Image (tube, rainbow, N blue to C red):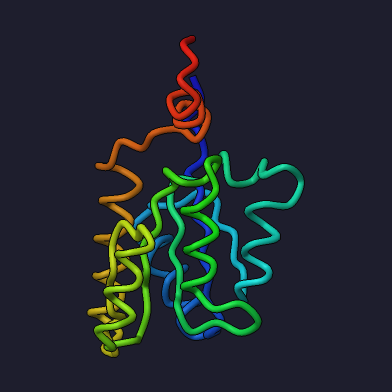
Length: 155
C-alpha cells in the first residue's frame, strides 16, 4: 500500500525563511509535498478556492503573521471560522515577539505559536521538531470527519 503524501501549506513571504524551512524538512525526510503561499491573500485562495479541495489534504499549516495583502491573523481567523478547515492544525511560525500577537493567535485557535530563531542551526532544529510532531506523532482529525461530527451526522 503506497504511503500517502505528507502535505504542508507554508505561508511565508521571506525567501530566506522559505528556503531554510524547505531545506530542514527535506534534510530530515519529513515532507513529500509542500505548497508555498507568499502572502495571506494567496493562502486564502489556496485554502478556499475550488471548493476547498486543497485544504482537505493538508496535515498542517505553517503560518507567518507579518504577511503582505492579508495578515496572518486574518488568515488564521478565516481557517478557524470555516467548518471545513476548523480542525486543520495551524502553527504560527513568526519572528514577532509581541505578546499581543501570541495571545491573539491562541484566541483565534492557533495550535502552536513559535518564534523563529535567528540562528541557522536553531532554526533548522526547530523545523525538524515541528515536522516530527505535526507530521509523524500527531494524529489529525480529517476535515470530512470533523464536518460530520459538527453536523451530528452518523456514518
